[in-house]
Image 1 (cartoon, rainbow, N blue to C red):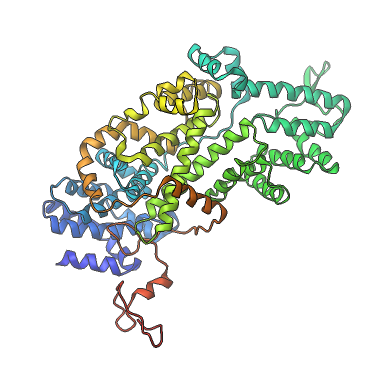
Image 2 (image 1 turned 180 degrees about the vertical axis):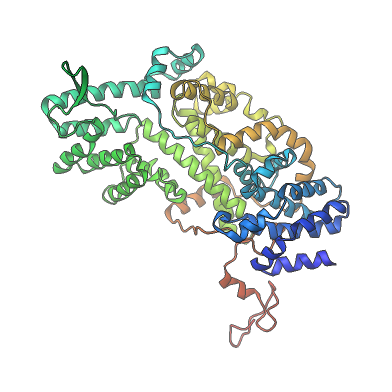
Length: 576
């Protein structure tokens, strides 16, 4: 009876009550450990712990000293182990399991260290990707991704030109060289980069002779559309015999370093009415200065004048705002001036933005009353997977972002298909002949499966950019690594439990055409509110987003008791 009372209090009492009761989690954990086979008591205690600790785990703990102190007082590893012990009992209820799975997934947000110390928890989350329910799969995916949020490395994406030159001079290993040859050497990123760099130096030498900044600007704007490495950070040098050294020289131009040519050329272009080319140069200049926000701002201004230039959309897509970035990437892909480089860059951005938005939508959507959010989330995930497929099929084997798109391709395929994927992941290891036949591709390396592609892509990135250093262990790298290591064992250990979770909660999935329509509507009319995820009244263990303005609508005007079936007074239309 006491445990049932705690459930009722934490369900209706609000955040302040939940915070207070979260402080006694150690006591609740001890009871859970003492009576793990008491199914009724265990259910009430796990619901209470999920309500209270879940409220502490979500949101920005680092900015909330109250949450920080509460979490520090809880032995999360001990609590999570106690919860997992109960999940192994036969005959557990759906309600217990739903709340437990929420708690385990959300614990990785702020207690990742404790979660990583429990292999069974990681296997449970990975097994959650085999659920029949989209929401459960995305909740599990969110938990897996955040396991390594703090310890992950950052991929700077800045290639060292010296390492690139050394790699080219040393020559590709035979199996990678064969890969490039089959794709078409003249279409690879390395070939285009080398050619543009040579042409760039020729253009600078010509500018030194004729001082024609307008012609130089036209040429540079063309190079920028071909490769990310279009502007060399070099200069003209002359030798001083007396000093015994080489000194940078402007050659009579208004700049010394070649990267500084961009604003001068942009000015010359603008004076003659070539506004689009001038904007491209100024945006690129901001990128060379590591100022992506300024580049995006310049691009937004340029788009107001001409929305048909793909490079402007690409610059906006590079911003961290996922909503704005996805719209820009999708619109850029519809432009007529696309080069292979810009197209693949936009596909990469579209995959990342849509994947992040989709998994957040579905992980947070716990009520079928949120049908719009639910259907949008599925549309995002399907769109991300479609763009990832297109990128994988068409991008050069040495494209800078290929490994990142392949990481997402693996994650999205498993998340979208769910239990259709075999425990041994054979669908990602065997031939992709159906993909090849559908596009009439002949690249033999696609026949090896996605995991083999990933291995080759990581080798390629290691060869060109890092002199055999391994790829950076980003959040997404860790996610794929955990899936590969624990998918089979997680299925063997937890599949029967996940099937129980599926029995009552499988949401209807809209058709692919419906999902495409939803995404098209969203792209034209984006209204997404950004805010902290708050745990409200539980819906089978799923969080429901409530605003305080709406809460009053579900309380009796006389006794304040919450109810979903209140009647409104037909006389005053306000009393309930």
